[in-house]
Each structure stands twice: as structure tokens, then as C-alpha cells.
Image 1 (tube, rainbow over the protein chains, first blue to last red):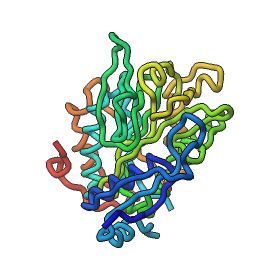
Image 2 (cartoon, rainbow over the protein chains, first blue to last red):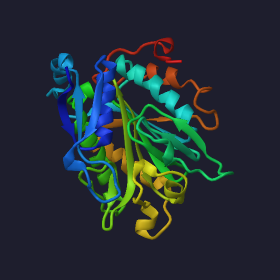
Image 3 (cartoon, each protein chain N blue to C red):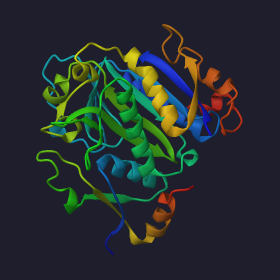
Image 4 (cartoon, one colour):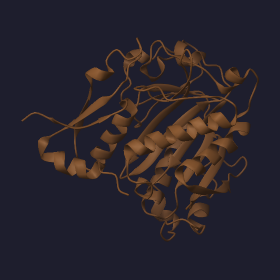
Length: 69
Length: 255
């Protein structure tokens, strides 16, 4: 089964932060640049990033990333 | 309500030594042995490669005196050197809303306030990392963060007064081929020391993260490891912090 989207974040650094957090909880993930970010400021990479996880990990990943008040 | 925290002004510290210290402090923060802790320092010339760095980003000329270090932080390659204020917040994000996106925004906000306090108007640019001066866009601060079990390491590097040529001549910094870089000194048109900026950086972090810093002085000339850093950190009461009980040195030493 393919990977499913977990969340979209503002930029690559934020994506790497979330991936490092997921990794320490044993959840593997991939990051994909969204179409929205492509071409943002010519010559500069970046833009919003989509984080993908295995469907089996989706619920626990969502729970992990839910902000606590 | 503010929370007690430590701030450590370390002067110039080799990158790997500061990295070791961060990991050790992260273990202590994670255990609740010490409150949130901020390291403020400068590095000797060093290029650090984040986890997304590509080989093609490096084009250091022969003979350049610079260390190259692979790190576990997010992001691509960047350059650190004297004249750049480096800030490593070791925060337990469970004490700050447990929200990665909010932490990023707050770190950016702290940088914008720091720059505002010294007379530089800076901003975020949607989709790009770091903090910028406009226009045209010039990057003045870089951000790269790692999180393990909700405890942060790495942080930001703010260009105070240094030659920005290494950002473009030695590397494709942050993976941004066409980006230009600037410093506070260049924007203000006068020389400026890291010492002048550091108090504003600490104040901005206190405001944004709701902290009240206790400064832990570094021991002159002793280096980081010979001095009883951990002993002093863990022996201090945590004050207003919600951190738990103190523990012995042996429990927080990561290496």
C-alpha cells in the first residue's frame, strides 16, 4: 500500500524537524515538495512540504503531532 | 507566567564540542534534571551539512581554513564563523505546547524581535527558511533544528558582523543558489559586536517563550569539558521552573 499524507508544513526545515521527531518514535516518513512551493522565488528551493507516512502509522503520527494546550 | 531557564554565554566554541554539549544537555532537559537551557556562542570557521545537504553544495577553495562537519539537524549546508551569534535552545517542547510548527514560528519571532531591538527590520518570507531583510531579499539568519523525544537541539545563527563571502563562495548555503546574505553591521552601516546583540537575543527568547533566564557563567579559559559544567548545572535548584528534581552528573553525561 502507498504512503499517505500526514501533514503539510511551511518549509523544508519544519519538515525535517517533524521527520526527526517521528523517527525517534519509530515512525518512518518521506517528505515531498508540494506543487504550491515549486517555483517560489526563482532559483530558491523550499516552499511547503508534504510529509508522508505508512497508513499503519498514520493515527499514531497524527496523535504525536497534535499540539497540547 | 514565566518559567525559570538557564542561559549560558560561552564565547567561541568549536562546533563539535558545542554539539556534544547540546546532546548532553538535551539528555538532562529530557529527564527534567535541568530546566530549558539556551547556549549563546560563536564558532570558529566551520561548514555544517544538514541531513538534506547535497555533495554539489560544497565548493571550498584549496587552502581555506575551515572545518567541515556533518550534523543531524534539518536543512542543508551552512557556514558559521566569528561574528555570528549562534543560539542553541535546548527546550522540552512538552513545556511549550508540544507543537513543532509553533516552535518554528516562535524561534523566528525571537529573531525578528532581536533584530528589531538593534534597529534592523526583518521578516519571514513564505516558503523560505530563516529570517530575511527586504528588499531585495537578503538572508540575515538561518534556522536548523533537530527534535528528539520533544527536546530540541541546534537552533539559529544570526549574522552580526562577518564576511558573508563563504556563504556563496565556499558553499551553496541552505541550498539557495541565488540567495544573497547580509549582516546586522552591513544593514546598520557600522561595526557591531556579538556582545552587543547577545542581551537582545536573550531578552527576545525570554519574551517569546515565557522564560526567565538565570545566567550561568562560563569558566574563563577552561574549555567546556574540563570545567564542572554538568555538576554546576545539575546542582542548581531549578527556581521557578517546572523541571523536576536534580540528578547526579553521571546520569546526564551522554558520552
